[in-house]
Structure formats: C-alpha cells, structure tokens
Image (cartoon, rainbow, N blue to C red; front, side, top):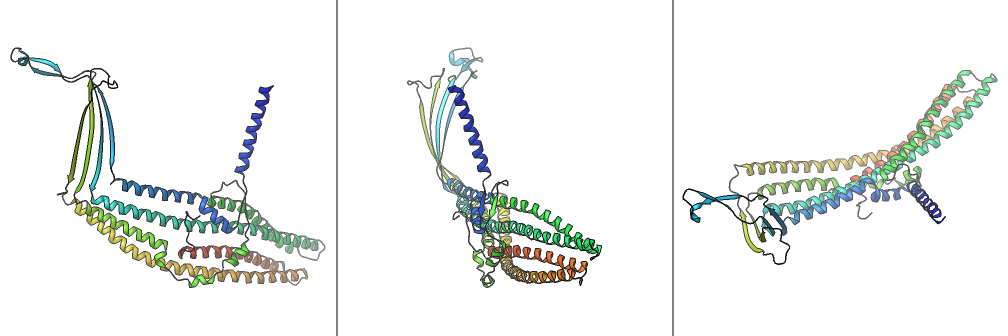
Length: 457
C-alpha cells in the first residue's frame, strides 16, 4: 500500500508540474506602449542577439590584445620503437675483415620527453594596428547596437499601432454592420408594404455583404497583428497580450511640432558614426599593409626533459631524466616581395579614398533623411487632423442621407454612396493615426532621440 500511495503521489506531482509548465507557457501579458518598448529592448530576439554581438566584440578585442602577451605551450611525447632501426657500421672497428659491415641498433626502445616553450612578441607593427582596429570594431558594434535599439523601438511602435488599428477597425465595422442590419430590416419591411422599391433593398444588401466580409477579414487580422506583435517583442505566439493604450490617445500624445524645429546634431547621428567607423577601419587596413614592411622581433625560452628506457619505467622514482633549456631571439626583416606589398598598400589606399567619399555622401544623405522625416511627420499630423474633420463631415452627410432616404427624398444609391464614403473615411482616420505614430518614430530615429542602449534597459 505504501508503494502504491507513493506512485500515486508521484504521478500527481508530475501532473501538477506539467499543468504549471503549461500555465507558464500560456502567460498573459499587458503592455502600455512605453512598457512594450522597454520589454522589447530587454527581451526581444533582436535585442538578445545585439547584446551577444557586443559580448563577442569585447572577446574579439581581447583575442587581438592577447596576441602580444606571453604565449606558453607544453608538449609531452612518448615514443615506442616497436621495431628499432638498424644501422650498418664497418666491421673493421670491431676487428672484422675489411669491406664487411655489422648491424648495430642505437638508442633504447622507448623514449619520453616533456617540454615547455614561452614566446613573447617584442615588436610587430601589424600587432599595434590590429589592437587599434579591434577598438574601432568595438565602437562600431556599440554604435550598431544603439541603432538596433532605435529600430526595435520603431518596430514596436509600428506593431503596437497595427494591433490597435485592427481592434478599432473591428469595433467600427461591428457598429456599421449593426446600423446597416437595422436599415436593411426597416427597408425590407417598407418594401413588403409597398413603400420602397426592391432596388433600395438590394443596394443595402450589397453594402451589408461588403461590410460583413470586411468585418470577418478584420477579425482575422486582429489575430495576425497580435502574433506579429508577439514576434517583435520576443514572446511566444500562443501567449495572449493586452494593450492598455488606445489609438486616439496615442495619436494626440504624439503630436509634438517642436520636433520640426529640432537642430540636427550630425555628429551624434548613428549613421554618421557608422560611416566614420568604416573610414577608420579603412585607415587601419592601410596602416596594416604599411606595417608589413617593418621588422618583427620576438623572443622565446624553452625547457625540456628526456628519458630513455628499454621498458616503460618512466613513472618510477629512480628513472633518470636529462634536462635541457634554450633561449633565443628571432628577428624577421622583410626585404623584397616582388612589389606584392606595394600592390596591397595601393589597394588599401584606394579603399580608404572610397570610404572618405562615401563618408561625405553619408553626411549629405543624413541631412536629407532628417529633412524628409520632418516633412513626413508634418504631413502625417496634417493628414490626421484632416481625417478627423472629414470623419465629422462624412457622419453628418450619412445621417442626412439616412433621413432623406427614410422620408423618400433620397435614392438608395445616394445613401449607399454616403455610407461607403463614411466607411472609407473611418478607415482613413485609423490609418492616419498609425502613420502619425510611425512618422514620429522615424523622425526621432533620424534625430537619434531618445538615445537608447541595451545596457540601460
């Protein structure tokens, strides 16, 4: 009975653990836009790999630095001459007849040696260049990580906005469908009583079917946009999310026209820093080719011990070992390479000239990018405000046509046109809100504001 009870309890334990694991995998998340950005900067797939890139760059810098530090290697060799080589010696040395030879075996059948060698680089021009280049590469990686953080922020804003747009669109279409359904019922009853033409019913049916199709598609889009948001955040697709901000509030909060007057600190722009890093790397490559014409000086010291035996007795206390040690300096002086080094140096110089030209081009592109981002943002604000006014007008027009249609003063075609215009204006307003959020995020990215990194988040 005790054994059976233990088995039952163990099974219940496994079941509870499995249920707990399943519960954790189905965790529900709730985010404001600010919270979503902070979470993505810490936990998104892109952020995780960006931190790994920085860690790898730090290790790469140390790898380069370590080339100039002492290097120590140890070596142990064991040799067993299963069939020892035979040498022939003149038989005369042992009193034999001239012209004959005797076979002789030299050495012991087994041999073991242990040695250690320390190497130290004293001077190498390419090492100095490599250390400087590794620092530049680390700066480049950090700058790339900052740019990645801004891109993550921009992607989260876009994904967050898409979810809100899809949810709001479902709400609007459901309201429109309910209104249309009521109109269709009333018009059908009037037609059956001979107060409306059949065409009026058919026109409303066309609009109703179109709205029904759009509603079904919008509901599917909600699921897709949520999964896209999860992917951007680094959250499993099956986990539920709740967005606590609403689109109207976010649109109003993101109207900040002072950004249009923000000065461009081009030296702080990340694309500028990346272009400058590329130029510095080309300078290091040129200096590296030049340094190959300089001499290379290094030193080493070696210590070794050897032992010989006919049998494996090397672990015995009385085994005899013979020590030796050597110290030396090596100087390598490049003299002539058939103009190979000259050709490589010329190529590196050309690459540097190209990088300088690209750097100048990048500066002009950054200025144009900021100017265009400001224009896009200003247009997005204007489009949003216009869309709000257009929606008010479209609602009034639709209401007027609804009354006229009920009173027999407007045709069903006129009503359908007014309804279609209203539905289009509603969706235009939603899209203008999303465009406003994205345009501001793009402008802030171009201005490098806010400044983000993964170590502070």
